[in-house]
Image (cartoon, rainbow, N blue to C red):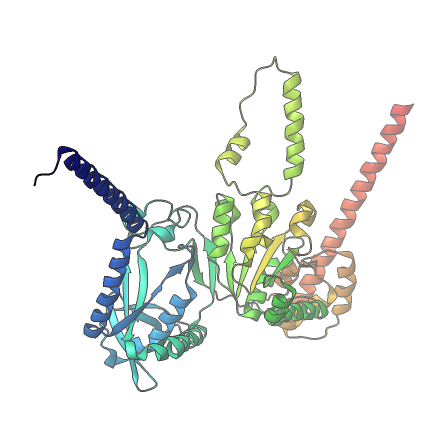
Length: 515
């Protein structure tokens, strides 16, 4: 029996509705599956099983130690410790390392050796766990030329270097929990044994290395071998002891600085006339503490960012020095200069009909030179970045402390002010002992009396006490010193007399003008 046309039409309508509902449901389900990123879930599931399968075929795990951390901002301490630790394994003839890097060691006749790229060395820990270290590097990729650079610095343009540690998965707990801490401890100890103190200076601009590549550091260095110590420093013994006690308190104050919430650093301001021993004081401090010295030439620092970069690349156990800071940059009169500029601007407003004068040669030089500001130096001393690392001493020297901005030398930035004054009698006796080997002499009383009236630097006193001919001895050298002191006293009296005469003459001229 055939269905009626009406029944067929109704059946077609019902089928269309069912298909539409099925399409809508499928769309909803599909969109839900897409929002759940099912393909990613399936991919992760497959990758998990692939890793398990790979572990059966390759049972080794790896740990990579990169040379730089913090986005290439600083050389990694862990990398340097691994490098120092591997020196022992590298020197073992059984290690099979064929290509080595050599650097000067503390012993002038020896080298500190490390592996060259693509060299591998095995190490056995506690007699049963064997690991393998591979040294390698990767060149800079072209697509890394963007903002990933370390502020556009040299370190970002050099090859990236790594150490890769490989070990069996069954040894995971021993390697990660015991071996790696052991490597770092032994590496630090080896660095101390092989450490050679250095004197650093900052490089100006980008510099190419001897191998044609970019230099990896903003610092260049030489071995620091200055002979000056506190034992040979001409200074009053009481003041010298006070400085040494202060240095000891700083060196042993890690827990104290952490407890009070301060960065482990201390500022010293050395001020006094030229020749009073400011630079030799820095050398004595470095020798006493066994610290490196970073000597910053501010005129070679282009911006505040570059100054910050210099600080980040300094290491702990170091003295950061800016000598003659009053002469390095115009950091002493920014507020005064601002007032002068405001006054000049006001004058230009009143003289608007006059043609504007071209900038002077000095202004052009300032515009092209360093843009380091007082604010940048203040942040360098005790800003947030100054807390990166620890055990650092910052030293400023100046011949004219009165010219420095008070904000620059206040307590908390320059914590201890040390005046390097003219030679006193106690300092003279010390110099006589060092240079002439005597503790007493009949000319000492004359020297004592003259030093009360004459200002002479320790450098000048030492020069007069230095034997200059085969027949010179304590008598001749002390006689020469007394002669120079008497001459200086006479010159001082003569200058004082001329000044008094000029003042009297000026007073007389003033009285004549009034009449």
